[in-house]
Length: 88
Image (cartoon, rainbow, N blue to C red; front, side, top):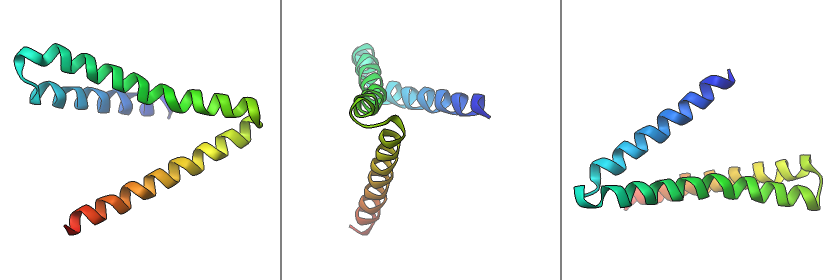
């Protein structure tokens, strides 16, 4: 269901923020948390802006297909990179 996906994303965000808070020095915790939030916001907004801009140029279904292919290629690159890192 749609609400399960939203809660899973919230839990992942909460867990990653907890890790950032855990590894940051106490005097820099606010700076690290603010930096995390900025990067988190940008990382979520860039794909949305990219698909929206592409939808202005081509049709919306084509923009979604292009985004899907790019996400698939990026995922494959991550898997290949992780396998290469495990060998080293």
